[in-house]
Image (cartoon, rainbow, N blue to C red; front, side, top):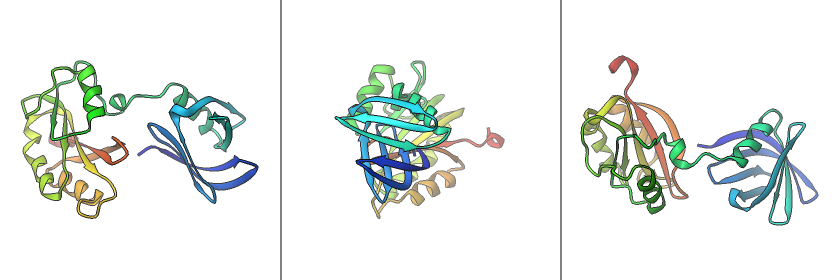
Length: 201
């Protein structure tokens, strides 16, 4: 979902090998040491010779990332918003069906005040909330509402056994769509993007 890379972490006098992950709202490290740094708590970030040096809450951590360090430093200083990652532009024609995340909806209203709450023709983006496998069947009826280069984002809970990522992918593919991207919508939900294949447009 985010950008993941093998890294060495130096923190608190210890060195750990593992994987670093830059998400929309946090920087994570998973290895002998586990570290989570919400981006909002970062006081400063800089890159030196392939090392990402992060100061946060009176603490400091160094991630040895190689060439990625400069790109991550820039992304942390100038983060893309969730709506940017989801491809929502001010002139996008958007429909939202059964997505209840209030932070997402508030941001969407600020950018696209007139988004639809039911399918309609020529949509650029459809956000479909699915809390069960049964609800995933609705995606097949939404394809006709998309513009040829439009996208359906299926917003589903993560970490549950009754509706798995595999179920989401299977439903999108069964509707004749191609899964092209995944994004973290919130702590509890993931969004998978599906697109009409080029040869079917």
